[in-house]
Length: 81
Image 1: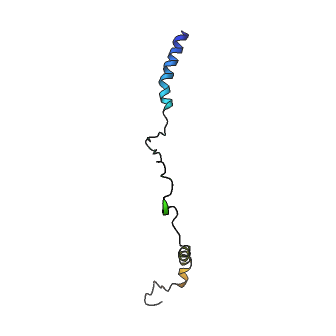
Image 2 (image 1 turned 120 degrees about the horizontal axis):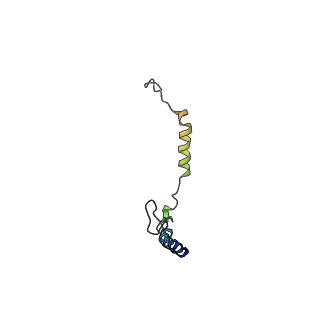
């Protein structure tokens, strides 16, 4: 009786082993997961960090914050400033 139970447990374990070996993230990729290609995460050449004109960025910020003070717009009477 005990040997039949052990044999049944062994068969169940052999069936479960392939299930345990499968992992969600594989080298091929599965639904919802696409592994990165080697070297694709590294920046290339001059695209690594674009140059930023800090003076222009500051000018845009100043116009956004203080441009309304110098505006000569009267929406109610278009002929008058």
